[in-house]
Image (cartoon, rainbow, N blue to C red; front, top):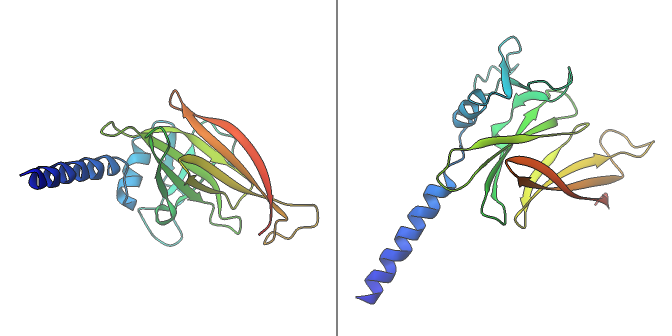
Length: 179
C-alpha cells in the first residue's frame, strides 16, 4: 500500500512540475503570441524575415533608442530556466540579421501557474548570450580590445541579473579572458 501511495505522490509531483515548466512557451508560435501580447513590444510588419518565416518577425522594444533593441525572433535559441527563487524565465533572442547576430534578448518570467510577464530586455553591441546558470540569469557580452577582429574578442563580460518587483536588476559584473 505504501509503495502505491509513494508512486502516486511521485506521479502527482511530476505532473505538477511538468505543468509548472510549461507556463512559458516552448514553441515559436507560442513565443510569438507572448511577444504580440506584450504592450512594451511591437512587431514591425514592414520588415518581413528574409527567410520568409512568419513565426520570426522583426520585433522592437517600444520607446528604445531608434535603431537599437530589435531583431527577428530566434525562438530556436531561446533559453528556459528556473532561478534559485523558483521563478521560471525565458530569454528570447532577437537576431539582427547581420554579422553581429543577437543584440537584444527579451526576458519573460512566471511563477508556477501564473501567466508569464515581460520583465525587460538586455542589449549589447552584438553576440549577446543569456543563460540560466546555477539558478541565476547571466548575460555574456564580447569585450573587444582596440585591435580585436569582430570574430575574436579578447575578453567577455558576464553580468548576473535578478528579477525584483517584476523588473531586471543588475547584481554583479565580471570579466573573463577568451577561452
